[in-house]
Image (cartoon, rainbow, N blue to C red; front, side, top):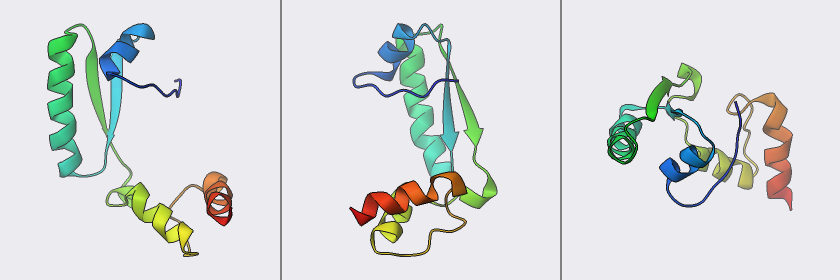
Length: 96
């Protein structure tokens, strides 16, 4: 597994990386509706590349990153909302 960033079309990035599968994380039904549309568009552009969907852990199913960021920004407690290994990084980002 490799984590990377890009700009432009996802399918172009996937081709550049010579990958064959896109993995998308889903938190709720609304995520699926949007991501399913994107998967269909990607499939029309690149029929040889598959999209797989993974459901989130129930602990994070209705938690948005923007909510966590806002909570951290205003000094709220984010214990249990993010992995312990990144909690300090998030809090430090908003102290600056």
